[in-house]
Length: 376
Image (cartoon, rainbow, N blue to C red; front, top):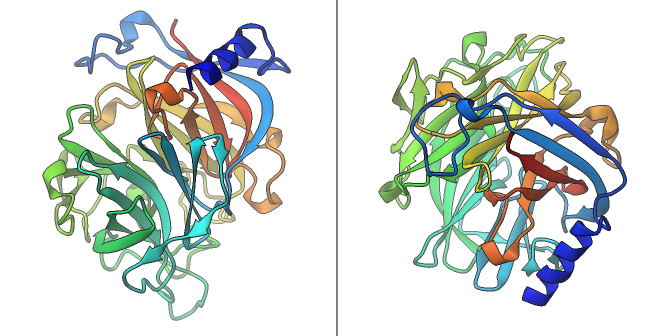
């Protein structure tokens, strides 16, 4: 492993990796607040920046239709892709994975399962959270749905899953069946989950599609770590400055509200947040999709930062890091969906939830970019 890493870093230092083109994009700095650790970046130190370099193509095994979470168990890395129906692959690191195979759920969940987030506990239990699309939800349409988020656990790294129930759903009466949105009449979905650095709470970053524009956008909820085995009724949404709305049926105050109603043909909204802890910046980083119509046409990929998950209002204004027109190799209608960071250092157990200064940017399960985070 050490020999492999040494060769890899020599390639980087000699310019053999990611030397095709470079684009530096400044992003706004972190707001002041309690430091997570001594490495935390604050506004006093100025804004960080992101460097994207073209790099050799890498691709996840299986079919990708959502965030693709991964975890380590010893020297083996496991990755989940869904389309729907989760598939698992494994290998010596995130970039050398074998073929993907189907996983098994202990009960039928109508509307499909897309595993979008995982957490490997010290006792060996793997926790997973999934996006589900029940149908039909509107009498006037067989296609429209309203996503919800469920929880599961696995004793065998995701070969088999025990369902734990649904933990995030939109309020009753929040559907808009006259929507001009191609897919959703409401719901909570398209999300990611991360445990805070203190090990106290899991934070859910979800896309919300309520009929009221005031509850549309990217929203946040959280659950106490001890409640992970009995999550139903123990997830609480951020609303009007407090964690006081229930995960099932509660209201939200989006941290990134829509610019134009999701249910209009000319919608304008961020969605599909993908979160990781960046050890180099000492901050949490979220990547976002940006849709510019009801058909979910992608305009670009954006980044935002925050050093304290307990302060949802402290996320920086999203800044674009990549135009949709610069993303190739995916279906035209879905060009540019599902951006996520994957750390490049196996010695530090980096994943989609943990990365350092250097990482790969994956979009729709493919990576053509090396991503470097820079301090001022």
